Image 1: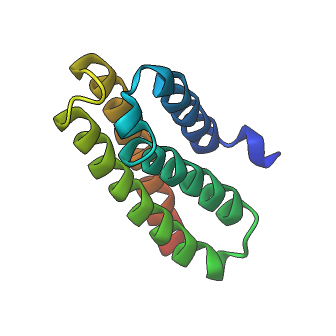
Image 2: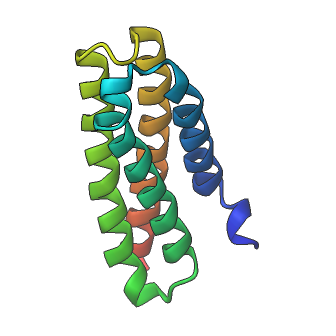
Length: 116
């Protein structure tokens, strides 16, 4: 299986595309602070997923735990963008649902790796 065919990779990729699409509507003072942090953290999540998909089982659990921490940070940053009104509630809900789905997939992967 190609690394790009992994469902969690596709979801993370779509999350970044959604974030990137919202960039134009985010006020300039927020675009280069918290919103840029959201985008960079989303890229870190994608990078971690790709890294884990190619690792041996013994290394995979540690990488996935790091990805989980990054995903939780992303969740906070996205909530912050809503609270400072850099994005509206509708966009927040879309992004939060995407993060929640990735989180469920990641949790399942971590559980699977730890029980092998």
